[in-house]
Length: 304
Ligand code: AMP
Image (cartoon, rainbow, N blue to C red; front, side, top):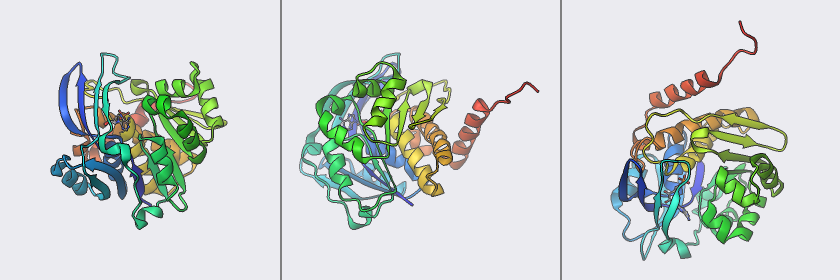
């Protein structure tokens, strides 16, 4: 199984307490695709403008991402400018320039219509619905969103929730979506809107996976140096879905394992600006980090 990813491909400008970058490669589908490409075949569906630097497309191709669905339209590429304070968990959006994203209506290449695992990464929920209507028989559909759409396109987003199996959002987004401060109550409200599963990402505090009767909690990897949290959520989702696709097993137990692989990919993403660290992850880096996750959480029920 491969993964179909639709979302944004962006030029990001980001400021964190540790530095600043201008117009670097970013976007929800970019991070998601790179992370998933460590596990499985990835089809990327997104739009860029004529100003999108060709080396970025070449890099995605070299990572094994199928970019046939990455179309170029007249105009400027989507741009996002954000800032993080010392509390690195939440980005403050300084500017969103939709540009070519505003009128994008993707037609899926025939191959992508057969996709078994679909990731509707953060993008206009109307567009998420448009893509989903073209996929024939997906086995798992996961989606992400953000406050920009929760506030601006709530009705379309509620329609997305009815169509998906798994929603992955951060704690602030879960609270705004459910209009509820308590995360457990917010999770129950969101599950009532349609998805069978919900993952709430909590930055340095890890992730919580809810379904109607159970919760699974995974820590975040305790990193000494976090440079740029941008893309952590998308890398988490890409890693998780890539792992599920590679193992061809959508059981609850495997979903728990997938959360750890997603957390490992997210931990790499934040170690440098843009996709710089994500680019260089090796099989050994990944296995070491997953083993460390295991060592951090395993315990005996009784004292030996
Ligand atoms: P994350 O940090 O995982 O939530 O995602 C960060 C990525 O989301 C950045 O690289 C941005 O380019 C992208 N992004 C920010 N705002 C939007 C938006 N309104 N629609 C789609 N993508 C966005």
